[in-house]
Amino acid sequence: MTGLLDGDIGGGIVGGIGGGIEDFTLPPELEAHEPPEARGPGLTRDAVRLLVSRGTSGGSRGDGGIGMAGEIGEIGRTGEVGRTGETEGAGEISHHAFTDLPHLLRPGDLLVVNNSATLPAAVHLDRLAVHFSTEHEDGTWLVELRRRTASATEPYPGGADGEWLPLPGGATLRLLERRTPRLWRARLDRPVPAYLDRYGVPIRYSYVGRDWPLADYQTVFGLVPGSAEMPSAGRPFTAALVTELVSRGIGVAPITLHTGVASPEKDEPPYPERFEVTEATARQVNLARETGGRVIAVGTTVVRALETVATGSGRVRAARGWTSHVVTPMSGVRVVDGLVTGLHEPRSSHLLMLSAITGRDLLARSYEEALKERYLWHEFGDLHLILR
Image (cartoon, rainbow, N blue to C red):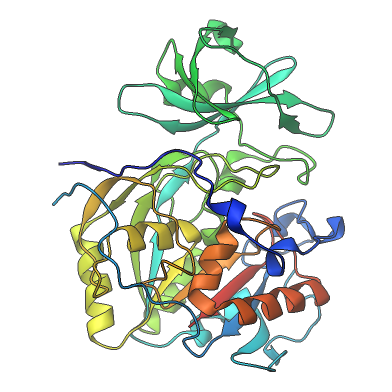
């Protein structure tokens, strides 16, 4: 049985963010413009840096209920890999290559990854682009209309209920109703996945200067198509790195959460997204916690899924459906002990989640270090390992 999680799309949680870490300025030169393997000969997708923030359990542990309704059953560009950085205050910050990850975790730890694969979710018209975001059970989709520019796209405020948009290949998209200031519920006159396979390209924003093949937007874990944008924390993992992790006694377990379109120009929280946590993964998470292992989420999508299905005691149960859960310092976390994630934009709602895991002070100092040490942001950028 599928459980649907209630909640309005685009609630106003980010409106309560104050000054501090959320208001930092990201210099344009720290935006990753291309995949790391395109930055020089011989580089692979794991050729990125890893900022490590080790806390002293300064994050927030939630003690609420399960939070859902329904049920089912360039490497080290500084050349200072492993260098310890800021240590003032609670926690420690250090700098590594991403390939050091197996040596930064312990036998018995469990990495939980997102196995959602990326769709070629952008369809280009002459002047507009349609970004297909989220499929609903009735066959309609949430879509975003964007105006095409010389470099990429920008928000397009137009559109009207009932309007028909002609798409490439003779397809027609009907706008049914506006669901948020930027998202429409719409219906295509043919099956969307097959249409996107033929006419779609990966979604990209202005900081990426050109289109890249869909393969560059997939992760080694992506088996279940459905994400409008890449679950990017998993991108630097290679088959060889996963093999090394497993050989050192570090487990890997999947969840599925299909990501919707981001809001690079808006301060919006994530809206409801489809997810699944299987019985097998629930057992692995619970066993790791019972035997002293740490549960390390690879990506904020994994945190969202696990915390959605967590009980007050931190046990995880299998479930699938839709989640509206947003992790904040107030709600805390009940399951995850760490997170592998990218570096997030100013005022991103994801910074609330990171604060819940590591504490606000250590997070602020970590981002100061990332800026000072010239880490790269966005989906082709460097990574951040947070340990409570």
